[in-house]
Length: 168
Image (cartoon, rainbow, N blue to C red):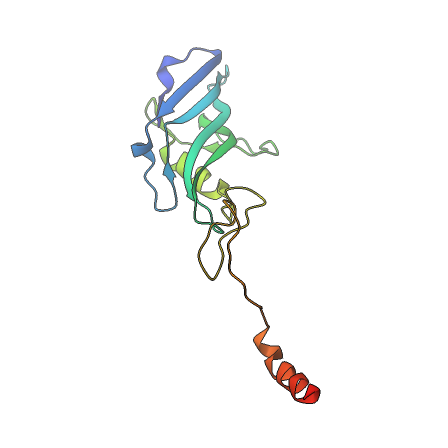
């Protein structure tokens, strides 16, 4: 996603941009629809150019429990310095500097990395996902299965044998 800084004038300018999923190819995720960036560009009298806004991306995911595909919505706030000098004291939500000799700021790598680190460690279609039956493979979110099994901890198998001998 590239932003042509020369199109902005001094002061605050609203920005709304979209980028096609092909622009953000990654082995970690696939976008299901165009990524959106909305926010504002601030050009100060000192020449400092700031971008503050929100990235919204819809990511195709597969549930770790039931293997169902679903869409994960990622909304991430960003604050960036597009050009200008680095200040010694940065605000608490520190800004990233994009040194720029031209009027084009390429945010593709930054946005791609931001999406990747915003993804959850465990992908779940629902927080209370029941998963699949380990014996027949039935998706337990869609209904129960007819499997009857007694789950015994294999470490306790010898105790069960001993108990059975004592009862005989």
